[in-house]
Length: 447
View 1 (spheres, rainbow, N blue to C red):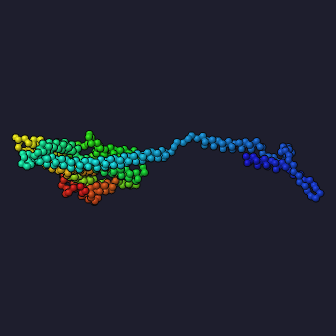
View 2: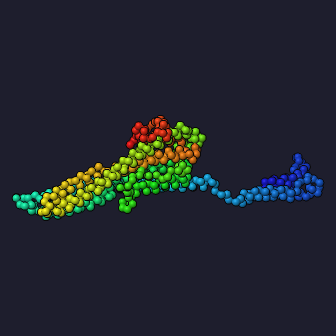
View 3: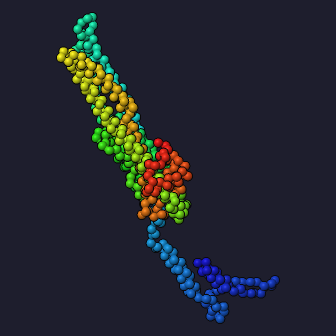
């Protein structure tokens, strides 16, 4: 349009040919507007055709409009892959936060229930001991004569009260020995600690890592379910067997698999190359780990399993003896005053109650069930360390998929209460000719 306007201006200016007219005092200029065709007819100045100029302008405008229409008519592009990835990453982060919240809630639930069951142990222990001692005193008072009379004037009341109290104590002992409150409290304490540990692990992963996968979510879910199975909340039914025929280490972790685990925990060493990881694992290091594995299995784990089985037998004997003695005391209290038996029923009632109190105090005062659960968890602790070593020493495991050796050695040393340099002392025990129980001491120094 600017070109067309300039062309029109040129036509106007060129068609205005000045005419010079003489004047008395000088020259006078006169301008007139004439048709351009007259100039062409007169053989004057030739101009380009206006039609050609318009055609050129139309071509330019069409070209511009066609290019703009091409841009506007382009099909809409799909959303960039980065945006989709960001949405998926946000969803994974939300899932991990949800699992962490569930783990925190589980920890609080187990802490509350553990406190409740610990109170059960104290209250039931004191209550049962008070009942049995009171029944023993009543059985003795029933035979005491007052003022030279034969027997006590309250003989029948003391006799029946003693028998009734012994019967109640027998039932309470049987129930308490069945559920083992001290062992239940220890289960909840361990579950609280492990759920808090799992929550911290997930929180640390979220802070240190910006990339997460579905495997991370699946692994966290499996850990929560494994803990729920190892430490159930229900009391009856569903609680763990309190008198197993053979004690086994507690397993509170899912099956360990390298493809589902972080090669480096919490992505701390993301910048370390895989080649550097694989170079560190050599025969010398593997020998030391094999020796440590043998000592863990043959000494540490085996020791706690042996103690656990021993305390299962002790606890079973005490659990049977307590109610049995209280039941015999109840029978003796019921037979007090029988002429044919003489003083034997009184002796049975009084001594049975005293012995039942002693046995109950020994079992629940010393918390034999808690010690049993502690041994089982200690054995499970060393079993887990052994499985981690076996997983990394598996011949079918590629070097690139093994854990970072420096972090793995530090993890093992801290779990065992040792220095990293002390792990090399276990290398001689990797030989088949050397037994793990020949090691002086134990692999773990914490417990």
